[in-house]
Structures are given as C-alpha cells and as structure tokens.
Image (cartoon, rainbow, N blue to C red):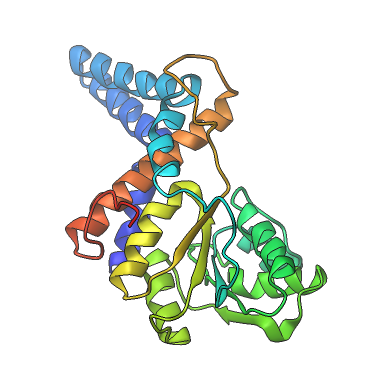
Length: 265
C-alpha cells in the first residue's frame, strides 16, 4: 500500500502535474462564472511553472541534500564491498531492447565500474528491482549485470538483488542478503541528493555504511536567479527536489527513518 501511495503522491506533486491541475481547475471555475477563483488558480499554475522552469529554485532545494553527506577525501584502503542503489537505467527501454541504456542517474553505475577496478577483490552489490507502477521495466540489478560484465567486471563478483521497488526495500533486502557485522565497511553509492534518505534507511535497517555520493546536480555555488539554465533541466531539478523532500517527510512520519534530514556521524 505504501508503495502504491508513494507513486500516486509522487505523480501529483510534480510541478507539471500541479500546473495542469490548477489550470484545469481554473478553467472549470471560469466555465461556472467564478472568475476570481479561476484567475487565482491559473495564476498559481503559471507561477509554479515559472519558478520551476526558469529559476534556480530546484538547485537551491537540492543543494542542502547534496552537501549533507560528503564523499571521503580519500577512498578507504580496505572495504568489504560496494553497494549500488538502482535507479540509473531506462528499465522499460532495456526490457524491450535488451541493452543497458543509462538514465539521468547512470553515474551510479559508472562509479560502480570505477570502484570495481579500484578494488579488484571485493563484491559489487546492485540492489534495485523495477520501481515502475504501470510500465514494465527490467530490474536495474539485471541490467547492471550485462553492463558491468561488458566493462570487464567478473560476474562472480556481482551480488544482485532485484526485488526491491524503493529505497526502503533496498536497505531491508540488502541487509537480509549480506548479513553484515560491525567489523565490515561497505560503501554506499547513490545520487548525492538521494544520500540523506538512503543513509537514514540503511541506519534504520541496522546496516552502517560509508556514503559515496555521485551524480551531483548542483555546483554548490547557486544563488536565487532566473534564466540560469535551460528550462527542462531546471524543471527536472525542481521535480527531483520536491520528490526527495516529500519523501523524507513521509518516511519520517511513517517511522521508516528517525530524522527528516539525517546528519553524518
């Protein structure tokens, strides 16, 4: 139930969806002669569109998430393994074509290949099934097997968890699969904006990991401004930021994490 509800809410809170709902409500209100209400709804819709697409609002919302957990200045000399969270492949395309098409978070798997080279004797754990509610997508763990072996990673090193549909399940299923103990040190690879929620969920699952953020979307130097990036990228950043902040709040309210914005140790 939580999975389905999260997908529905995630769809509704997208800026474009909010714009469509507000403008649609405004047009309905106009048809009934409620001009003031109609004007308010349409104006709010266009205000959301402008702020989301032509300002740095999305980057400013992402920045505190990306800067919360810093990557270690130097990679640890000895680690037990690398855990990579799914979400970086075009699941529906790969299911249809059998390739390994990378999406906007594909840096996670580039980092996996680099770490596999730098640490040639450790397991590389990929956790990620299909998180699509309506589309049929190939689990990222399955796609990653083709990609990483094509890049020269020994198949025997890959540990694949392809059942999880969200980050909560990533943490739970990976903990069950690996059964780690306190003497082990595992790197956790995911997008920088996604790291706070991921760290909180792995901690809640009793799995202490070392953050290894990748896939940064901000420079860390943004200020409030207009027309600083193309509208599509700005809109995407705003959508990501809203979804991630709402996700943190929802996970805290449902007891899945202990803090809305977890802090480093």
